[in-house]
Image 1 (tube, rainbow, N blue to C red):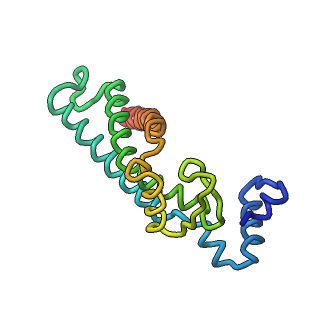
Image 2: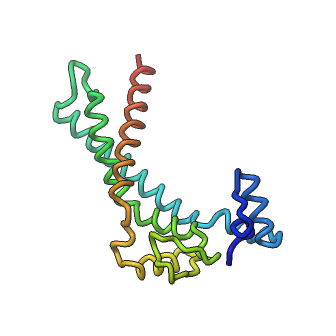
Image 3: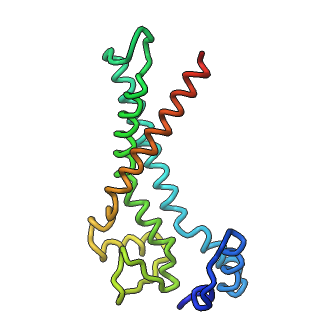
Length: 182
């Protein structure tokens, strides 16, 4: 079933346009709109929780180990060189993203609106359409589309992006912390 915007060729241009379209497509049933807006929220919370635990937990442990073993820089005890910060945060960001990637895949499949009979080319062939409305059915759908490997489809590029983002984020954090301490 195509949404009315897809049938008429109109494309959503912003938040209010999307809400207006959702209300029209749901025949103004507010509960359906709310469920649609929060589709994929549970796996997204799991994704963020796993990422934060792994990323910050590993980052803290590795930095403490570097400092404890005397590999910090200069006479400033307890400090890491900015290159060290970038390397450690890139590594921990990659580890965290790989650990949480299956949750991201589940969230993405749920948010694609499979219940509206849309097809995502990365998870299904053109002859397949599935209804995915909850975490369990999303997991089954992904598993059927390629087993364990399907949960990690696209992880390479995404992990590289995570390495860049986490290293820049932590470099900015450590530099700001350093400036505030002085």
